Image 1: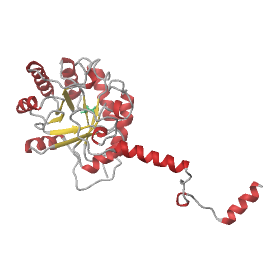
Image 2 (image 1 turned 120 degrees about the vertical axis):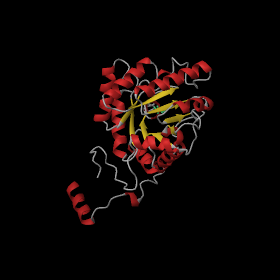
Image 3 (image 1 turned 90 degrees about the vertical axis):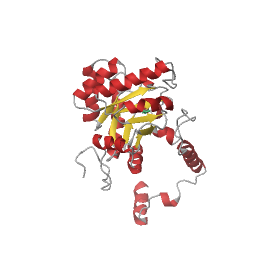
Image 4 (image 1 turned 135 degrees about the vertical axis):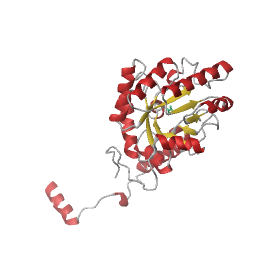
Length: 295
Ligand code: KIV
């Protein structure tokens, strides 16, 4: 059994839990790192079954499962509920808790306290925060100093997308790409164990990769990164519309869900459901007794 009482998934003796040294080793060997987001027990079980390396309880939960049209509204308490459910479904991937907007920017103390809640109350092993500006770098240093590893995130950072001019690719001029490079290097110096590059031209990623010593996981950043991440609901088609350009869709589950619920509704209305095989029986003598009692 697992030593962590939060982990309830059955052990798979064939696979070792992902650790930070193993992650570095994968980078060194050029072995692609696989990361997905998850927000509940079933998505965590799918990630575990697929043998992915990293699972992120992303603040994308705000849009994918909570129905907001941006990531900013999700609350820390909501993230903790989702992360606990994911924890119960995982054994081997490293579990990353995303720090939601407003839960780490105010002070180093706030950032440490939020990161600690993610670890203590939800069983996350590490946390992620967005941005590579001065304030984010300070928060990274503080959280790492408190003993919690941090993943950085540069390029398109959805929590501050308004300030970035909207949900669009970043680093498309030399100056903008240089700013991403400086942010990535600053986060690396501050102690990030890995970085996410989001929505950056592939050629810019290629130029930056030789300077980055920690694993880089890309989402819309081209093939040169050490690994790739996609949002669970995007890759499985649990959404309306196609999503960003970088999404590759591997299933069409929204259509499947719509069809399944429609078929149920039709069965109920046509009195095809429940059929005898979906019902419970009672001994005829007991039924006779009940009728007597009722009369
Ligand atoms: O919240 C999220 O899902 C993310 C990924 C896109 C990396 O930050």
